[in-house]
Image 1 (cartoon, rainbow, N blue to C red):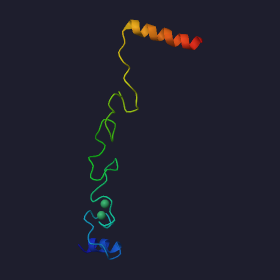
Image 2 (image 1 turned 180 degrees about the vertical axis):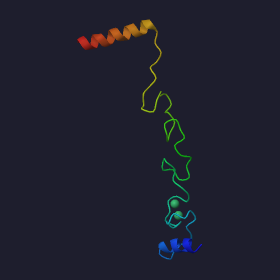
Image 3 (image 1 turned 90 degrees about the vertical axis):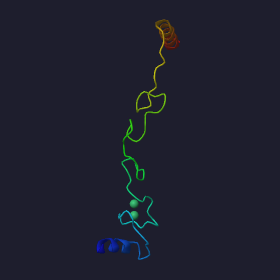
Image 4 (image 1 turned 30 degrees about the vertical axis):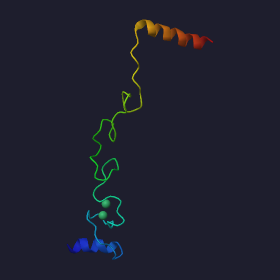
Length: 89
Ligand SMILES: [Ca+2]
Ligand SMILES: [Ca+2]
C-alpha cells in the first residue's frame, strides 16, 4: 500500500482518499470508479443498439432515418405525381 499512499500525496497531501486509485483525489474526482466507453461514470459501456444510446423512437437506424409510413400503391402514385408537379413548376 506504499504505492497508493504516494498517489494520495499527489493530491497535495490534503487528500482523504483516492478510492478508485486513478491518481485523482476523491474530492476532485468527477467519477469514483471508471468512465465507460460513453463517458458515463461506472456506466455499462457501449451496449446499446447505437453504441451509447438506443435507436431513437420512430427512427429506423442510428443515423436519424425515419420509417417511411406505409402507403398503399394508390397513395404512392398520388405522392409521386405531386412531387413531379412540383418539379415541373
Ligand atoms: Ca480517484
Ligand atoms: Ca476517477
